[in-house]
Amino acid sequence: MSRPVVTRFAPSPTGFLHIGGGRTALFNWLYARHFGGKMLLRIEDTDRERSTEAAIAAIIDGLKWLGLNWDGEIVYQFTRAARHREVAEQLLADGKAYRCYASPEELTAMREAARKEGRARLYDGRWRDRDPSEAPAGVKPVIRLKAPLTGETVIEDQVQGRVVWQNTDLDDLVLLRSDGNPTYMLAVVVDDHDMDVTHIIRGDDHLTNGARQKQIYEAMGWDVPVMAHIPLIHGPDGAKLSKRHGALGIEAYRAMGYLPAAMRNYLVRLGWAHGDQETFSTEEMIAAFDLPAIGRAPARLDLAKLDNLNGHYIRGTDDAELIAILEDLLPHIAGGDELAGKLTPALRAKLLAAMPGLKERAKTLIELFEASRFLWASRPLEISAAAMVLLTPEAKAVIAALLPDLEAITDWNAAAVEAVVRNFAERTNVKLGAVAQPLRAALTGKTTSPPIFDVLAVLGRDDSLGRLRDQAAA
Image 1 (cartoon, rainbow, N blue to C red):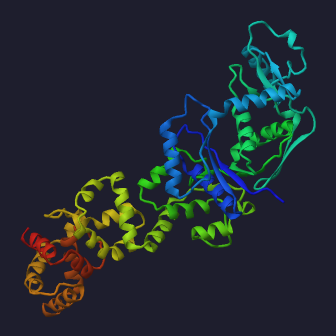
Image 2 (image 1 turned 30 degrees about the vertical axis):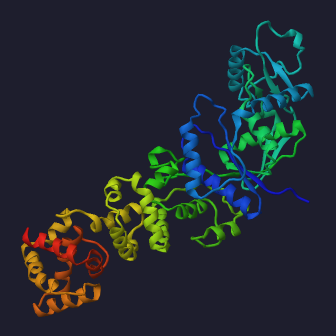
């Protein structure tokens, strides 16, 4: 019987969860869920100087926002240092590792000589077979792996295919530093083994690490996990993704008004395909996801595509749920506190009534927030420059002439208002657009909005008439 699938997401908490890390976590999560297995979370915090509590919190928060739940307790790599040292000592005792007393100056000289001669192997193995009695006094050694000197190290990668390294090109890597601290290479292998990880899915910048880590597995006689090294995400210009390409942290995309479901859908399509299908429910993703469908070419970040996808998800989200999501976002967006202070049950009812029209055009929650501003803006309304162009003296005169007809409406609703406005346009021989556009500018302060009769209905009689009087008199 084959082992149950266990994947892991193992970020270093030296910064926030960037978009590439989010995608790696998603691929691990989907693969584990597809096979009914587990995805574990390990925080690789061995770099004590650069690891921060804020970064750990941001990574956990980012995963939760994306809806990627892990199984079991979070493993913190630093707490397992004693176990890592134990394995290094075991390799030493088994003759699979050795103490190296080379000084920093000697190592520098070795590297320079190797580079001059064009050799990939930088360490010359001078302590590999020497008697420890020759060790210089007062020097604390490192422990190095006795890597094979001949043959090949091969990884049958699920994405990259068969990848081969000549062992003559791979160094005897350091397992334990002279201060007794384990290296990243050792810690990762020991943790993955102890956590029963069956599949390692990570960025292809770790591909060479995969070869070195496989040598540690083999020295210990452990099963080597299946490996899948996924191409990195590039910017729109084809260069490796960097800060100059825009927001990189998952928390930034959240603040920019993207929905978690849209983000998951966008990330899964960055390098993975399932026929021509573009939109996936979470259930569809889990059912379809597999490693061979991941391409070898780097994916390119395309924010316009993300915007369109996000608009699709906004339109498909329940109106009441959208209001709740928007409310959660208010502390993180400019001007959000103003709406938060006005969210009475009456305003919530207005937002709910307006939402079908508001969400039709919005591609982000920020756009949705801005589009809703007319519902809760204080009088006199702030009029945009473009809307001000529509409010000519002639247009204000039209509004003033229409006001008595609107004031006479007793049962205020979209149909009643529309009938009155159309009747007024016919009676005064004015095109409907010449009435509707100034009404829109006066009622919303903008040139675009949901249908104007819906706007009048949602704002209600008193607010609508008050805003129109403000502009007619201005």
